[in-house]
Length: 303
Image (cartoon, rainbow, N blue to C red; front, top):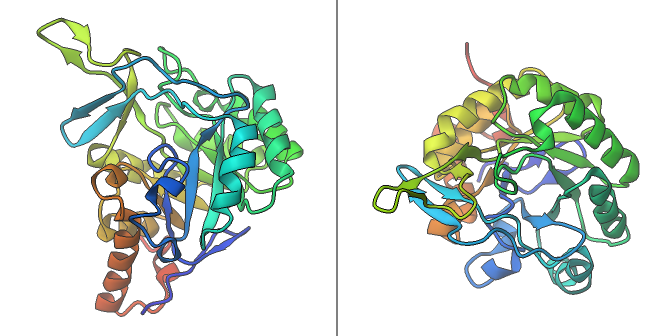
């Protein structure tokens, strides 16, 4: 086997494959289908301070080459997560990342304060980019100053590394990434979903209860790959690539353009063991190409 270990600077992973937040529940739901020792880690679904119901249905729509979701980040709240879910997650043989959310800046800090008291968490992924919580898709990651301010605030309050998860719904992704880095982010993950919608032509109504949702899946991979390259070329902190990864070859593309690791999202809905399969396929690629360490691929694009 090739050496698949991945270095995020603040953490070394068994391999570069993580599950993407919002597509993997709290992780425990996948226990019957997946050997967690075969992946680098899991990113749990977004955690707010209080429990949330999410958006009204319908909340999912299939589209050509992808999926539009307007789930709206429902969850149990940070206290119940710490009391009931996190103790079970600690027993899994993989790294645990917690996706931190907030309606206001102060809520992010309250969630981090609770999580900071608990062992067994590798890092926080700061969710500043979800497009389907509000109907207009507004989020902090659409603005460089808002990104800088929130990341700086979260970093100053946290005893753990902060990964800023960025939105593709911007003119210059590199500018937003630079703001996150300047604010103290230890890493960047991108992209979150693209703001999208679908219409029922029979009723002339939106197919989603929230009107807008976030597009994910293979359709967005070329955009996500381009943005990952732009960000990895402009910041000095590690980058985690997300978007349309269905196979090991897809994941390898992200490493070549500069990502140190990847997150697998929509593929989990089709194949609950997709993350482990993709890690195996990356190993097969390395053996086929004579690559001894998968880290050799990171940033190896020839232009």
